[in-house]
Image (cartoon, rainbow, N blue to C red):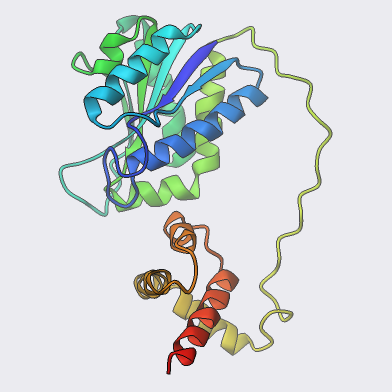
Length: 264
């Protein structure tokens, strides 16, 4: 059994850049917990929803880890460089106990492969509250750098593979793990195609896609629409997360056009 936790305490906390650390760690840890359960690994998942500052957060996480039944402690974080940059910086795994250095190196290597990141490897750190405060062997995973444009692109493109790599590597720490009996496969729903049923003109399709690919302009438009109350802010959040589809955007643009005309 192991215990995993999300670094920091929610949206707007931790490092920020092309994405927010506090928000993304919570999402990743929830998905990772489900993946571990599917693999038959007993796991405790900790997400801090009550702290108001960093010291409270560190105290809460260490206390919750130490109160749980487990053999390994894992904290998920994202790193930050002094300034934003386009180039990739990479992934690394921190530890304090030398007995777990080999496993930390293995984890860093597997995440780097899955995410196509630079592998910064395992690094011993003796100044981190989580590593010093937890009573079991522990690692702190820095998945990638939030203010590296390349790292964030790779993370978003390979998130599922990264979660799988972390889960599989954690599973390998418990060699006697037996996966649960798999449920019958569920046939996935077909993905709607961007074809003639939606836009009959190929030229028009290309023009709309070109507009949608201007991310700066699209974000400004969605932000204005949300501020005007044309649609909910969650559509802007979907855009920032890279999950807004082209036809979502077309529908939102139509609503915004109707709103603007009604005010004339």
